[in-house]
Image (cartoon, rainbow, N blue to C red; front, top):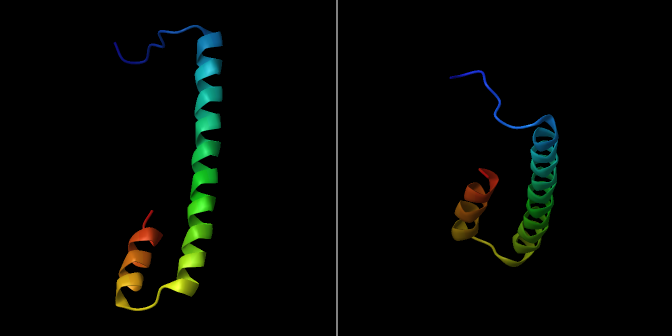
Length: 59
């Protein structure tokens, strides 16, 4: 049964809008996390931070 869409065009548009909004939410959260990371850079030094920062950069 591949290749079938089991929702109306209106439902599909609504889902598309929801995905778009959620994508924007994720982008906003990532921007906020990047700002926090920048603050940490000036407050936390050493190997532990470098490892933490490496993990953060993989997001």
